[in-house]
Image (cartoon, rainbow, N blue to C red; front, top):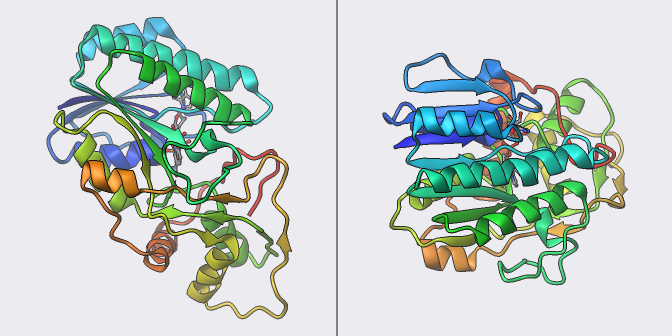
Length: 310
Ligand SMILES: NC(=O)c1ccc[n+]([C@@H]2O[C@H](COP(=O)([O-])OP(=O)(O)OC[C@H]3O[C@@H](n4cnc5c(N)ncnc54)[C@H](O)[C@@H]3O)[C@@H](O)[C@H]2O)c1
């Protein structure tokens, strides 16, 4: 395959590059390094890195004309400043349209998009079925939902994966890196009173291998274990891993205004349609992430919430 990966320097993008380049596929990564880092991308044959924004339509046209991709993985997203609606719109809507139209002109065999579970807003039922209405209320959720709608309205061979919290190398968002970093530094923590589902990177890569095949059915899929766990459950695995005995209980605080109390995606329809199922359970998933931090450390932590939450 000749794969364009937007947001290739990000957490998922860089893991996909490490998955596909050694397997002999040619990859062109486009990234503006807003939250990704150039240094995570290896200088190896089979990988070309272009610095720039997907909001720049001339750049996107040039990249597609020069590289002639057969497949596109659209992983670029803006979220780091919840008040910066212009940037979220430029990347998540205009940028998505630029990439989609270039991909359509080049007749790619597959376009894979990644969607946030925040597209569902405050869910009316948990676990959230893929048929649940989309009711986003944050800039990130609203712009990503508009981007996904443009993609679904296109003639592209599109798969949009609505993702649980994916763990894996370089994870720099959410409670796992936050607790690990703070506890190692002897700092206090709190847990927001929320429930999430976590998916191991190996399970994410296995669903990617299925949907990158042109034979897989187009559509929108929840990608998750369906196993909702509290942030306190995550905290307990981190403290046990670090061998920390607390002298007083960790405070549990209500979710912030732009946070969602419970986000657990129902993967049943995905399991049926794609014949895919997550293999790693909750504790193994979190532990594998912590072992990675033991070896490599935690970088700067990003958040799409207005105040960093644990
Ligand atoms: N990781 C998860 O658990 C998760 C969950 C739900 C959805 N997603 C979606 O998966 C995708 C990847 O997420 P991630 O966790 O790897 O995040 P990330 O921040 O690590 O990666 C996003 C990448 O996009 C780049 N980027 C931002 N704006 C850009 C622009 N205008 N032009 C080019 N590049 C730009 C960033 O620099 C970064 O490298 C996103 O679309 C996100 O919405 C991820």
